[in-house]
Length: 510
Image (cartoon, rainbow, N blue to C red; front, side):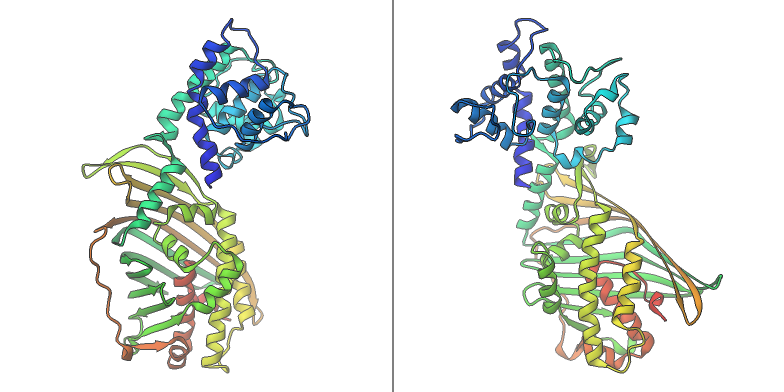
């Protein structure tokens, strides 16, 4: 990410080189500029430090200074060559200039999202078929953001004039100042800065507004057998360094016409890596269930060195912004500046990448399932109605069928650079078809969330619930005292809390 930040930070440098370029090579509007001279003038005009290298990545770039200039631009990701050649004396073309400017403004991950369809829908040049394939995403971005505005032919491979260069750079300066930056920071840089400020906090509280609702329908041999809906209406929580987290929620469930309200509490301590959870679904067993997360986290650690308990709990809170972006392959951009209750905010929009989210969720969930079934086997080895492999098979089929759209909007306080508000919009659909005891069963699950989280009382004292030892049972003991129906719900409840994947338990019935 640091490399990307360096690349993006070159945007202002290249944009501010307009005046220097204009005075240095403005003999007339048709003067062409070589690829090497373009690189030199941009680097020099902005006092970008040259890399101290004597060996060139290109066989046709010779001379100590030329090598340093080209290597500097090459290392920053602003230029590329033709195999092992740079063709330094060739005039720079229109599409090459556009690519350098776009690369200086945004990361490649932003540009490479544009498909061939995006190019065809966006670019209206009469000669757009002449644009090089590798240049199309950059040209698409440039047109979408008004960096270039050619009527008729673009002539992408023709030499570009100084007048055209200055116009593109003027447009880039306007884009940079009005859309891509706030206080001189790109969305990615402010995102990272805000994450650093949030991580400095010793404590905070949060509460939710809105609803997260799930609906499950099960059709067996063409007849609807099971219908269940759940909505979570209230979530309140607190956090304290180094990693103590508590949340309580109130949900309403309806299963085949029967309504029930459920209160649930979860407490996690990163220091000893213990999770406690309690639900009032069974008043007679009003105990905190203690789950040692160390075995699970050890296995998760082998999957990815990036993933740990702190990452998962922070991400589920929507506060560790940079870690969320790194783990789930998300993309950030600025939204409109807003005022909420008299306070001014920058807003940052973040979209999670569907496939990366599914992959990481699958890895973590399967690790949790392995550990959970080991505990069940210890508690009651004879009560294994559904085997681990059968459970994982159904679970993974659901994940593979998952169609998910997740969008976050972060409201970053202009004064403190802290996140005061976070909007979460998520739509998930999953489907699973299987046969059991000669019957064909189809299960459909939909989840829709529209939640506003508010964070407050930063660095103020927080009070966690006191857990008396006599009110705690280990997970294996919890399974022993639960009947079959309770065990089934308990195991899925644990999976949901650790992984964040909300899949109702009744679909795992044989």
